[in-house]
Amino acid sequence: MSGVRVLVGTRKGAFVLTSDERRERWDVSGPHFAGWEIYHLKGSPADPNRLYASQSSGWFGQVIQRSDDGGKTWEPVGNQFAYDGVTGTHLWYDGTPHPWEFARVWHLEPSLTDPDTVYAGVEDAALFRSTDGGQTWHELPGLRGHDSAGAWAPGAGGMCLHTIVQDPSEPRRIFIAISAAGVFRSDDAGESWRPMNRGLVSKEIPDPTAEVGHCVHRIAMHPSRPGVLFMQKHWDVMRSDDAGESWQEVSGNLPTDFGFPIDVHAHEPDTIYVVPIKSDSEHYPPDGKLSVYRSRTGGNEWEALTEGLPQKDCYVNVLRDAMAVDSLDSCGVYFGTTGGQVYVSADAGDNWAPIVRDLPPVLSVEAQTLP
Amino acid sequence: MTRVVLPLHLQRLANVGREVQLDVEGEVTQRSVLDALEASYPMLRGTIRDHTTRLRRPFVRFFACELDLSHEPPDAPLPEAVATGAEPFMVIGAMAGG
Image (tube, rainbow over all chains, first blue to last red; front, side, top):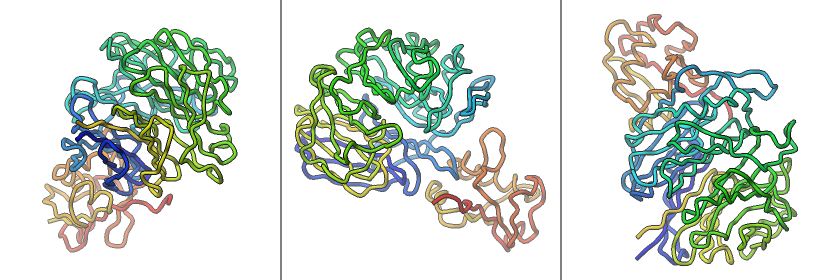
């Protein structure tokens, strides 16, 4: 019998939620790494029992955990993230140069084909890779060596590399996103990078159409159509039909186009999901009503999905890594909130139910479809 | 035998109890104790001291014999009672945050 495993990172530990394909009754395991911040955990597409977790603490720094049995047991692996070569500087909040300082791993992206290869997006923004199952980490320095890097500046959450998207049709192509620098693409397995921000307009920066400096919150791709990307920017929902070379706004009839996560239906490349948030100064749903918005047209035309979600007095946020889909026949959609709820829809968003209600604030949600 | 008391989070990370006992080679100093600790429990590398600079992380403190030794030089001898094992060397997570 097939099923799903949902990996939830929170401010105070990790949780593993499992169910059969009906997604009605759930087993909750955790907290794993109790008391630590778990920014992200994710399974290898090549071996679903191989999981990686980013465990961190303001006191004790960064730890990377690995599981080889689907999250039943874990082993600490390498946690040394040393920038390659001259550290250099980026811009600080006050506009002065600031040395790159490693703070934490925001996002772990296992290779599509090799369980021992995994990418790590870190704060201060850089991309690392391990090819030995997380034991050792090496920076891919071409990104931070880009001519624009000295002008990158942190967003409110720190200068984080939070999104890593691999192109399944071109194994040497990788997209990353940094707050607040924007999207970059490599076509040579991370050796060199180009900004991919043409068409973005950000009124919060001095030059709204600058090549870099945009606060991109998240990008998503459907694996069957890797030339099309979707983006939730600080404000604006965007779409690219040329692998990031240019972007068009597809916010359409959304009640607000501020938000953090964006994801794509597992079987319908033009069906996408966002969670509109009132504004950058009020990080909660408009009118206290929590709604996922779905577009079946690749953007512009959006419908509110509210069945089963709180429609009054709800003032949670949904963070950028806290939405995922499974690939069962009826696509499951998941998201977690800063109020500790993890919601599931087993019918592509039409109906929602909480899996858990009272976890610590949720930082990340990933879904694995199990045979 | 040198005794080291670890905070809860590092106990769990190293899968040990509150106190571990170590054979420390040479003079018993912060550096030699932490070197021995990290040799026995490699998963603690980087959690007490920075990997590269080997400096104490800002929110970690070192107590022993009712003294705060956090700002002592890493190669200064620790109190005799720590060296003999009569008193533990305590790694503390600073009271900060919530």
